[in-house]
Image 1 (cartoon, helix red, strand yellow):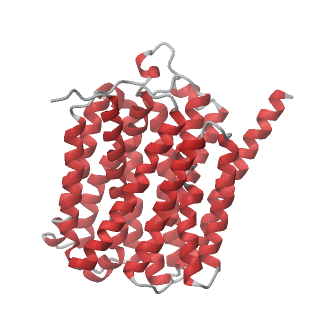
Image 2 (cartoon, rainbow, N blue to C red; image 1 turned 45 degrees about the vertical axis):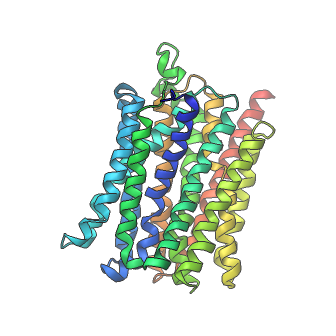
Length: 399
């Protein structure tokens, strides 16, 4: 057998982000079906979204303290084992337990724990690999989350069209196998630690991180990046089907799938030009585009334009998450696993709060998702003001 090298490590990490995309995007495709099959209410669907990312936050915090001690590889393999187990139980428990909501919630917690580990581990593993353009590699890595989203939406849409949505549990089993196979592959690839974890004398400690104003701004950016992205991607399928009155197939293809395609494309573009642009400026442009796309989706009466707004939101938010990580690792040398974990916590707080707040507002307005989603413009607005604040501080220092 040919010895595996760091190229295989990066490939395994790319696939790992596709696994995470399945974790974050498979259940929302089933929301409307679950409402009919198991009588799951809108507040319960909101709870599923909240629990998904709250679990990731808890795991992120635990990982910040223990992942480096346990070992990158062991935790990475465990993440895939948890994800695969969660998908398998998702296809089993709702049909053997009386309380359907609890039967869905248990596997959601299990696979979300796996996703939380992936969130913390995959970026630093790629960062530690010997690559020349770190920002480009990071953006390319995160594009595979998008292609995973495209895959789960596209394959699920095809599957539902052929076998009907009532047979969704067998697709859950297939995703379980996908996660477990990549976990097995990663057992055999080389994985090294970040420089900050290798050289403990020069590492940036947690107290120093939270005294750093740039890191505080990065945390705010990660929260708003997660909220901007997930507020749309988590509710786009239900928004298209119930708010725009288009079919399930058309809604998924023109809404969340188009969102993911443009988000992946945007990350590839940023990967190619990351050395030529100022990351802060790029983030401001992204935030302005995000505001415009949410307004198109929610304020225009035409379903075609609304769906276009959903899709363009993917392009607008594409660079927010990876660019913030790249910016932080660039200005704070000797990064450690803990720093990536705290950034992941911030991102997952955004991923939790964004969709959850939209769910609450939607429920308060009688299920009108347009009224819920329009509130999401607050997140890119905060990104713009945070970056302008940072620029003002830097200008005062240089003056």
